[in-house]
Length: 610
Ligand SMILES: Cc1ncc(C[n+]2csc(CCOP(=O)(O)OP(=O)(O)O)c2C)c(N)n1
Ligand SMILES: [Mg+2]
Image 1 (cartoon, rainbow, N blue to C red):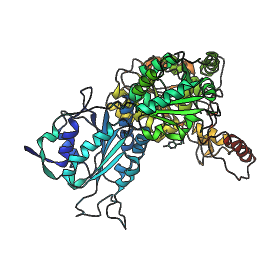
Image 2: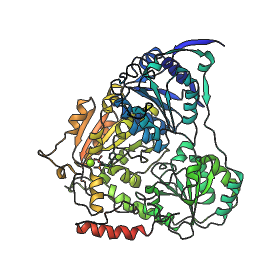
Image 3: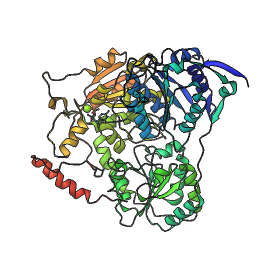
Image 4: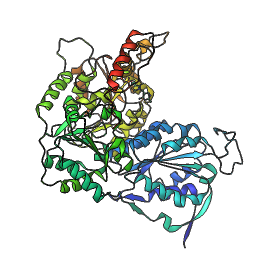
């Protein structure tokens, strides 16, 4: 056997650079890195040595670098991913939030934080977490519950099994998610004689899991008996590339489709069978169809509370739940009849098994009614209106300036709910919402990752002032890397959506809007100046008309473009939506809380166990 002598870090990078996807491109597109002790000498040297054929990028924060990596992979339907490496200790734990985000959203990312010395000679090292009772604990153990596969590399030759295992996890459609290989710093630097064929190029195919014949027969029989089914399209439609299969299935049987946050843009918004967004942030059309459905068919959905109205939405007494999902855990959720398969394969097989069946689709007037309400709130205000613009009007302006291929993205705040309701998504993945973890701080970094994934598409990042303040430094990275993203900052001077939630649960306005938070000096943040200081081109606009003009101007700008607009923190779209379970205090001195509690108890009665 021919061997080659390399350090463990050199071997890791050489192996990673030689793993390909079915399209013949490297599965790992490159590595985001912030160096420190624990990775600069080992992985840093290895990345430098491979720099001609393996990209390394430097960001400003480990968490947000990882958000870029996650957004990149999500936008590409998990067909490619990125690696992120950090120093030991704080650099590593900075990535834990991102790991959780990837875990919730089932997105592959390869975390390679440095770790303490396996040999323990210099212990305790700088940044080492010392556990009094367990010698194997390090800061990286925080990754365990948020990794699909966690390993600590304490000997070089462990990589011979750990790395293939990592790629298996990241390319498995059911188990897909973050992998953490915590890499002890002395081990990174240690040499080993590696079998040469370990580095031979390898292609990782994402298998299309076919349905079990018995499950398929049972589901087909159940659907043949149905009269008013509905399909809930989830993120799995995108990851499976099941857009055409979904369209054909829905059209063949005349079944309405509604979309979760992750599933939005599965069908174009104006497809006659797309009844719109579902759930808490859904359209009245979609929710009416769901309330009347006798069979609810989830396709690639986790049935998160925002999708199910905290399980109050599917009200028909004897209704059945079917879950077509590649992951058996999701396929059997909440008493669902499972159809464990890839979304496209499952829909195609189910289509064959149901041949001849056709349903009566719901009334198209439901959609017309919804769009009448929705279009009203997104319409540009009249020239004589002096009120602060609303976030819905901002969405209208962005929509009018966008093309069918534009990707609109967000993660937390007012915008995810409003965009879910109001954005008219054209092409698949023209809507990129991180609403699994809904993590403030994903926005700018995510937009950067999306643009790296699909440079040919315009990427518009909708971001609240609160989320901007939480994480904005990758804007400087976008400037440095010459990556064009457009940011629309809606400055309502605080956490507007949580302020409304606080009011909605009977609370006093407290500690959400900046004016309601403890202060000696009133907060005034000049977002345009801040973004401009990082090198972005900026515009502060006062009206919706000015916003549209700025967005038009943005098209010709080669680098990041930031538009800031003050908006009213109070209004949100009244139409559509369902109840959302947010627990209200049982005891309070506040009248409003007691009233909200009564309301809460009343609503809770509609919640179904399955
Ligand atoms: C990291 C993180 N912390 C806290 C939250 C809870 N949270 C959700 S939205 C929000 C406020 C967002 O404020 P902003 O971005 O200004 O949006 P707005 O609602 O004002 O439009 C908060 C605190 C979260 N989702 N993520
Ligand atoms: Mg805000």
